[in-house]
Length: 222
Image 1: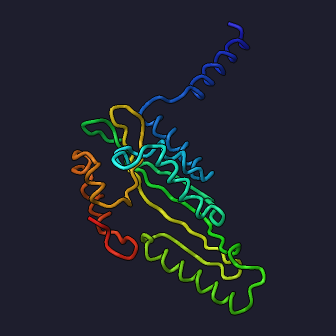
Image 2: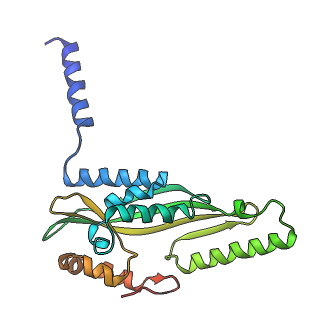
Image 3: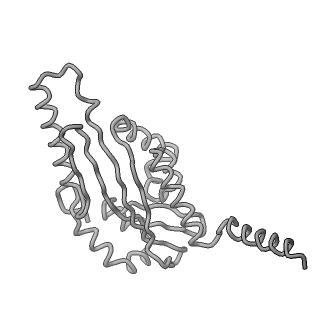
């Protein structure tokens, strides 16, 4: 056999397996996580409605109404916030329940909040002091709602707050309809309403930890 032909065949086979779409359960999960990461980094929150578990909102909103709501919420802070990093770390292996698959997926998110644009250019010394007090108050409120390990630092010169936070999503692939996200900061009454009893029973320790975590300075709603 011609050696050049053999080498070409090896390259073609390698390329096929390298670029062939991974349609395994883990492959589809990773693809969804990559897409969600891109949406977070581009701050295209309206499109995240396509990936939110429908049972969270279906009783009150259509998907399009949810999309509008997410976009409006983002618009309020878009001019001062910048997402600087976002990373998912799935807890493997994937787990099964009566209606399909699920996974706990941890994430870390880094962002900056630039308050400087809110300070009038002609502000006098007293106005600047009041402005900085307002930033420190906002930072205190943010820290009250933070989880242990979250970091929030204020640069007093630039008036920029750097935030690094972490959390966990529950991703569910129900009846092979695709992976959907459940934010575990939701009220516990809602989580227990929408989660299948199999998942609740299998993740009792995790759910208990969520119930004991601080939420806006108070105990999370059970």
